[in-house]
Image 1 (cartoon, rainbow, N blue to C red):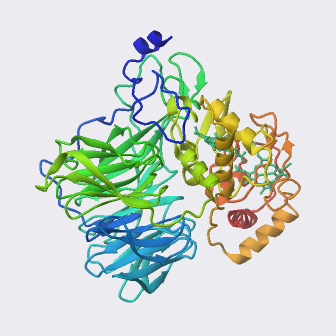
Image 2 (cartoon, helix red, strand yellow):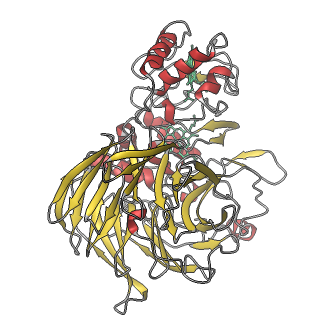
Image 3 (cartoon, rainbow, N blue to C red):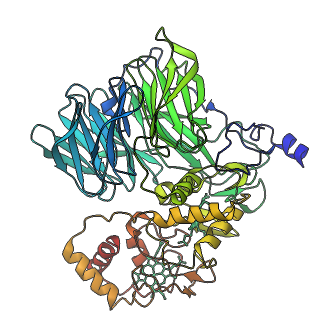
Amino acid sequence: MRRYLATLVPASIVTVGVALAHPVMAKRMVSDFDVAQPAFQLLGRPVGGTKPATATAAYLTSSRIAAVGEGALVIDADSGKLIRTDKAGKNIAQLDIGQNAGLLAFDPVASTAYVADRLNNRVAVIRIGDKLEITGTLQTPVEPYGVALAPDRKTLLVTTIADRTLVAYDLASSKEKWRTALAREPRGLAISPDGSRALVAYLATGTVDEIDLVETHAAEHVALSTAGSPRRCRRCGNDGDTFARGSFALTFMGDHQAVVPFQRETPVQQLAGSENTGSYGGGFEPPLTHQLAFLSMTGERTNQITATISQHQPRALAWDGAHDALYVAGMGTDTILQIKNASQVSITQGLSTTVKSGKDACGPDGLAVTSSGNVLVWCSFTRNVERVDFVDAKGELAAATKMNAGPALVASTMGDKQHLGMVLFHSAEPQISQRGALACASCHPDGRADGLSWRIDKHELQTPLLTGRVVGTHPYKWDGGDPTLRDSLTSTMKRLGGIGLDKPQTDALAAYVEGLPAVRTPTRDGQMVARGKKLFDSDAGCRSCHDGANYTDQERHKFSGTLSESDTPSLIGIAASAPYFHDGSAATLEALLRDRGAVHGMAETSNLNDQQIADLTAFLETL
Ligand code: HEC
Ligand code: HEC
């Protein structure tokens, strides 16, 4: 069997050592079949220039961490604390912002930071000195997340997740200048050094938005290319559609180039010449790889090439313009990849380093480059800052890295069990999935959903939202086949081709999933919501199944559709979980009520007029 595999797919399946071994995975098996994605492989001709692009100020890009002098400024999402550290990574000042905080931008000239307080719909303006002091507040639409400062340092841009907007604020007056609509699940935000455009990255759309900051303020969608690797195994076949997902961050390199990490997902794979096979657990080729898109915005249209990288769940990146070095951190692998000559045609792979210190997983969720060119890493699991020296004493890119791990800066708000569950949720290990190709967080980024339907046991099943939706909603899965959450997780790992976790680990994973907070709901017209609620409660007959605190009777129903029976799903957070139904056949809530996708028999809605559909949709979106 081994030889068979080795000769059949020499390129895509490569033996690796224990480099990615995970501490909590005591039983980790190192097999000959572990997949090593190439550390960095370009899938086309570089789009960069012959000279390095002009350096980009850090405050143009929203991040969890900024370099402040020799130390760092970091916003910890878990505790909601903003912390300033010294050179050794020690906590020298801290300030409460609010739990589940978003990202920050730091203006070194004015010694001022702007931090998104996600729960309280505001951006806190903070003077950064020996003490951290709130000097002002900008009210935002619901759920601010990304924050970036324009090059003139007078305009602040903020993305909001639930209300799906990009808002520009005039900092002198704290007044809103303009706003523009975004797609769902916006995350990273960056402004070009010439101030002409901004880019927004998304979790679930497969696009980035390019926003004209000078004239129209309108957003244009740029599809991320999912071109396959030329090295992929041809005999395996793979005619399924691929989708770009999970872009948490992006950055400009000069005025006309940008880099966007994303994951490339193939939810339905085919063997050449045969019928569809499930790709859920992997098959020969991993159904999910990690990529970097290099966008070039010089001409009429945006050109791009992609590169495959081995960083699993690349959630953070930073570009050192002075050395033209790009750094990308992989949350699932605890590694940082350096890419040299990143903005040039001579782009090439540099060093790669592990950021795990001791036995605990780091969970890198933020990168910043210091003035000397070294890299500060925010380890969100261990809650400490690590400084990785990529530059030598002469100020040049070094031949090897040196790491200094600072102490934990703040206590975790989670118990040990939940914390372990969080680490497991993000780990790409053979316990979870075949060859460790997939982590829970791959398909459920931020506990949400990739918006794709995966081929599992002859059915295409959509990834459900988990946040705020798993307590009191048993049974689990679209067909209600798993009576308890633990059963659901065990069967998931089995279906993913994972070896499985032991009981305490599975319990820890369940505890983490149960603790995920519900998604925030968007602002909707109160009268429409009230009318929609009335419809839902009475005439439309939705309550007969979608009842109780979670809007589910926890029963199975027989509808026409591909499943013989469907478990009534909870409607909590439904605004954030498009598309709808087990097969994703209704693209929007409106489509679900009007055209009903592929599932028929749920409720009679054809007698509803346009206003009633709009009202019902508005109500559903506030659940
Ligand atoms: C390849 C993408 C993928 C990965 C990886 C994945 N899931 Fe899922 N998840 C899905 C899909 C698709 C379903 C629906 C399957 C079904 O109904 O049979 C699902 C269903 C679930 C459910 C049931 C939710 C409900 O309300 O019924 C839970 C809980 C869950 N996943 C948690 C996890 C955890 C924890 C992990 C990691 C061990 C994980 N998932 C890994 C795609 C994925
Ligand atoms: C007979 C029970 C029943 C009734 C009545 C019912 N639903 Fe459902 N609902 C279900 C089931 C079961 C599903 C899952 C169907 C599937 O995808 O296979 C579902 C799915 C949904 C979904 C998609 C959930 C998701 O996560 O994709 C929405 C939204 C929804 N229902 C809203 C409504 C509304 C609004 C009404 C009233 C007009 C209604 N339902 C009436 C049982 C019901």
